[in-house]
Each structure stands twice: as C-alpha cells, then as structure tokens.
Length: 413
Figure 1: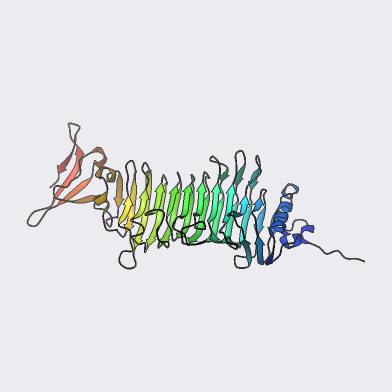
Figure 2 (figure 1 turned 90 degrees about the vertical axis):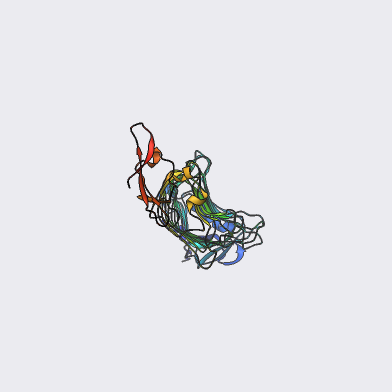
C-alpha cells in the first residue's frame, strides 16, 4: 500500500510550516514566494475556525521583497538567534507589512521569535510596518521577542487619520541601526508612531541610531512606553500618554538631529528617566517640553556624567504656556532653570525635591536679598526666604492678597 507523506498543513489546527511551501532554510535560494504562500494559505483559515499560525523553523531565509500579512495571521519562529530572515533589496522597503484590505480588519495578528536582518544586500531596508486606511483597522496585534538589525526604519505604526492602528503591543524587541554615517542607508527612525492611538511599547532597546535619526518618534495619542533604552534622541507627542523607565545611555552618533535628548509634548507623565554620559557638545538640553503642554508630571529624573562634559548644560526647557510639576530631579547641568528661563514661565511649574536644577522649591523658596518674584495669584501662599549678606539677618515673606484685592509680599520676620 502506498504511503502519503503528511505535511503540517494537512493536519487540521496545526501551524503552516514554510518548509512545506518550498522555503529554503539555508539562505541560498529566495524564500519570498514560499513564505508569502504560507501566509496567504493561513489567511483563509480563521473563518473555518482553524489555526492561522505560520511557522518558520530555525534556519536562515533570504527574502527579496516585502512579506504581506492582511489577515489574522501569526508568524512565529524558533528564536532571534535561530530563525533569521535576511532582507536583500536594491531599493529600501520593509521586510514585513501588516495591513488589511480596504474595509477589512485585522485582530490578533502577530510576529514573534525571529530576527530580521534588514541589510543583507547593498541597501538598508525597514523591519515592520503596521498600517491601515479607514475604514480598515489593525488592533490587538503584536510584535514581540524579535530582533531587527541593520535597519533604516525599525518599526512603523501608521494610520491615516486617528483610529486605524490602535491597542497593539510591541514587547521585548531589540533594534540595531544600519550605520552611523549620514547617507541613504542612515537610520531614520527606530520606532515611529504616527496617527496611531492607545498602543503599548515595552522592554525595547534601540541602538546605533545615526545622525539623521530618532530612536523614538511618536505622534500618537495614548501611547504608553515602559522600559525603553536608547543611544539616540527621541521625540514624543502623546496626549494621555505615559513614559516610564526611559534610559538614554550616551548619544552614539556624531551630530544628532536634535540638541535635546528627550523632547516631550502633551504627555501625562514622564517617570524614572536616566540620562547617562551624554556629551553637552552633542545635546545641550536634557528634557525639552513643548509650548502649551499643561498638567504634566516629571518625576525621578537622574542626569549623570562619566567624565568632564558628559552632561547637558541645560536640564529642562520650560516654554511659554507650559505648566506642571517636577519631582525628585537629581543631577544638574551647568545652569539652573532660573538662569535661562523667563521668570513667568518658571512660575507655572512646581518643583519638589529638585534643588539640583532650581532655587524655586515648593515649601520655602530661597532667593537673594531683594530678588523676590512679583507677587501674583499664582504665588498665593508661597513662602520666600531672602538670604542676607554677612552681618545681616535673613527675612521671610509670604505672598498674600490684601484687603484692596492686591497681591503682595507680607513680611513674617
């Protein structure tokens, strides 16, 4: 009796193995069509209640074009040092694109446990793009336990208006940029988020970011970042967003695209920030706050240097219209905030346990004799100690409203 070899695709509910579709695990032959065929086959299965997983076993696989996922398909390998995808292209393009057909939806798609080398050929390509055009959407999907190396753009989340890419997760991802020199292959973005909302990014390392590149560039509301480590500058504009446990360990490139290490706009909170050994010749400012950012809390910031000059000169920018609270700041630059910031802008901020960067501490503010700020409603209840010179006594004042409805400094002693 003749026997028929059983392929994994013949077993109901099993993952589809790319080897059954002709993929070459030695990295010699082009596996683009085979991997794409496995994904397309898996994409027909969810409606039948069957598995929609594509398995790429340990090995090295050459691809020469983008692999497209447009259904609820999960692509998994045997680990970042075992399953390796080599992208070889002459024109920069992404290795994987997660995008539904117009009018369609992708739920619970994912990529995990493999590595993408984005520069197997002469040109650095991109790692992943997750995108959708209204009325389509991508949601509840993930990229995790993945390495992306030699990239131009590492991962891009991009909707067209606001809600096409939402509530997705990137977790446990290591990204290493292609080159540190300016030019066609230079890194543009490690992680880019554009018109995507309520996505979560955690335990991500982004290194080898070039002169023209941002480690993280985000313009997506409700973005939550946890345990991010970079060696480049970043910009995050995210209403309702939170940044927690963010570390910058040097600026590796020669001339970064921004003179501010971490620029933030309209976020809710920035917590547990470490800025380590950043040369002031590369970045003059540690944290930059955008005009009009209000209600922001910045807490537990450490700015440390290793050797002379490895610290930004200016700890934080407080522009017009910004307002918030700074708590527990350790490590100053060359100047305190008052030395380079308009006094009216500083008055909009409360400083708690942050004497490394300001003399305007909540509680009792210490100023030189005759240097009290102008009394105002915003300072009502503020205590100021004027420090006298040799042979004279200090003086204490409180800001109050008098019976004539005028704010004044009232001497306590």
